[in-house]
Length: 582
Image (cartoon, rainbow, N blue to C red; front, top):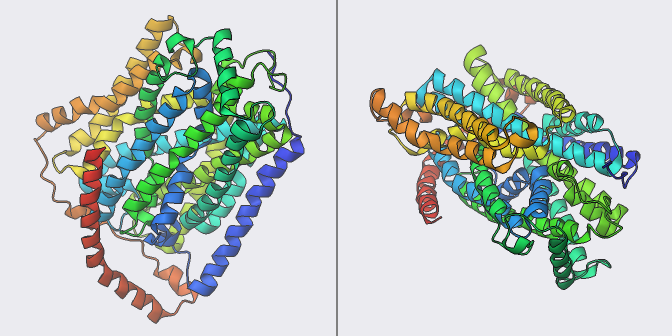
């Protein structure tokens, strides 16, 4: 079946991508100059990569919500709802909320035990040395690459479906304004734009919800949606759902997706340096409440989006206003995340298409700028300053961050084009990510929480766990389908086997390697405290900032350190209680 024609013109698509994006870039350039002029704020390497370590809980929560709202959050959740009915949005949202709430404990622990760290990989190196550091650097970068590919692939598919802009053009153009304003403002730019993006996202999502359940002339009430979903279940019942209904929580496919979802998302939170960046940037007192508020607030986004537009897609498929009428959406269209834009077009016509385009663009750019800072800080501090130029000072570190940011964005664009032409969709990547990265979750967590894990266990467990996961994934696919294709390897059973194996295999490997190679480590946490900040005196001197003001700021930092440690100890106890309770 051919795809329906775009609801908007190509000019509108290019206008959103370039106009809105460069509007944010100009805003951040202006804001950076204002902060320098009136707040004596200088863009040092520390400020670029850590935002000064002074962010408050409200903006931390907004940044967590915005960074965790990928294109997949909106598109994939609606697709899951389209497949499994009302259970899908709940399983999607709950399966990706718990990680943020649990990560609050790691955030506080990182602030407490490594107050000067720039990335979580520096902590790995401080404790275990080079082999483990290189292992986790690979896993960290793979995580960032997978997340970035999902963002760009999902965004490009939506732009192409709604406006006719060629996917390759969208892939190359979407990152440009993001690179521009992140290049200027660094991590603080990510925080500020995350807040603005979040406001726009909530306005559009609430508009869709009110239209679907209150004002639409084709739906307009919960009872109308209910009746149409009952009728849809009669026409095409859901295999594995009780009575084939879209209105039941008893869904075999939904539960399988939940397990895959929760396993994969542990990897993308606990191994994504972007979330550690936000913990590092937060003021010590505000890290815990910021992450808890952000995790709880985020639940509403995929749940409301999917229960609105995913169910609307099911209800309106038989309506001539639906883009694929009289046919159902194909599996490739669902996997590409097109349930949401097609439902929006059926509800609001061109207005719905425009709102969807802005919604997805905001989700892509807000999350992608976080990935840019995350990867550039890894290349700058964990590769360049660690192995290439240990004596690098502020100006050189900023230059390295800028170069790595541009190079990373270009590489992601090239890989995304290859995936597009080979039919690898956002949905496939979303399910695959846990297979490739989740074996490092438990070793990474134990690095901060348990003094007994030795370097052998930390280094080898992720590698062997991933190997076992890939074998389990491909063997299950071969046994299930008899062949290895994108469609077969992307189905539920193979992905379930691979994801669960990846996450749980270190439960076996970590104790085994601790027993075989020297026993438990009795780590005292002191080497983490010795991680040093970057030397930014060259940047400060060239900025014209008063030298006495610089020294006064340094003395104030030292005086507040002990007080912050006391507050962190209290927050750590609260976080541990919250984690055990959950």
